[in-house]
Image 1 (cartoon, rainbow over the protein chains, first blue to last red):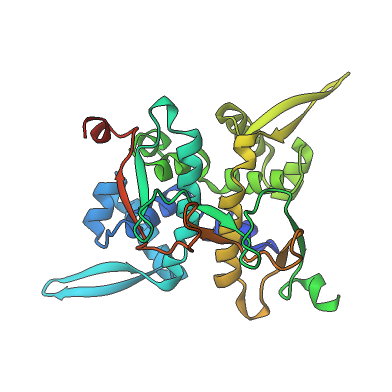
Image 2: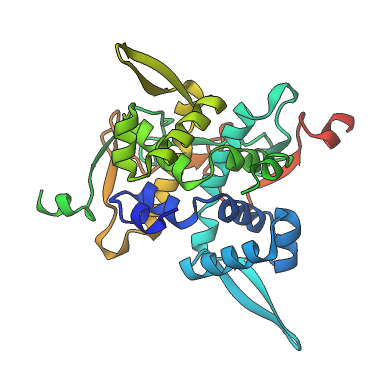
Amino acid sequence: MRRDLIAAKECSIARAIAAIGDPWSLLLIREAHGGETRFAGFKKTMGAQPSVVSDRLKRLVDIGVLERHEYSSHPPRFEYRLTTMGDDLFPVLIALNTWGDAYLSGDAGPPLVYRHDRCGHAADATVVCGHCRAELAPGDVTAEPGPGSAKGVDE
Amino acid sequence: MRRDLIAAKECSIARAIAAIGDPWSLLLIREAHGGETRFAGFKKTMGAQPSVVSDRLKRLVDIGVLERHEYSSHPPRFEYRLTTMGDDLFPVLIALNTWGDAYLSGDAGPPLVYRHDRCGHAADATVVCGHCRAELAPGDVTAEPGPGSAKGVDE
């Protein structure tokens, strides 16, 4: 996977991919957003080998997406809770969900509907510009060097 | 990776992860959104082995994210263009970018800024409810069986 090479790119998309863009990490983050907190639960809902679950839990704790809490001391048992950094992956999940609904549901339609509790309608998640609130489509944005760019600093 | 098991879940997020949720597929989709269309270009910008690039290009064509076009017949040469299905992965990329900007940029700040051409401000992509346009946060939505759910059909 060469996470190091991907992460070294001057691009937050590449860095995010290197951090959490593998199937088991993404699936684990999905389960955590669904309320799962415990090793046995992740193992069951993900259908993954224990070693895979341990590896991804450790990695996500190291990155800062999850926090490990001891919930029983005799014997020691731990649960894994999303941090704010983990909560903030919600837009990634909802964007994957919208795309999967549109293209991977077949004739039957979406397997799940996410209802927006506040307005009562299906959420139909949409990405908008945070400034003008217009919907963002490919071609609507132009990449420029930012403050963290080697080039940007001198320009 | 057991894509088959992940894809079988009754969840569009899991299906999307199984389809395109691996580092090289995601990175290739990023490059395609950046305008790359040719094998040699993908190989160079991704820093991946030729076999990895071939495998992911074929897979993304099979899924329907890319279309393969012959642009030269002597010798035969091909380019790969995003389909509408591929264009519609833009919200996933922009959501990864927002998260990477926030958490993986360090003190320097984001390496790139995506300017919204229409309003002229940094896009600061935000996920909103398509109905009421309120910003969506974790806990704001409730999953219900949809039309494509085995349970949903009888309920």
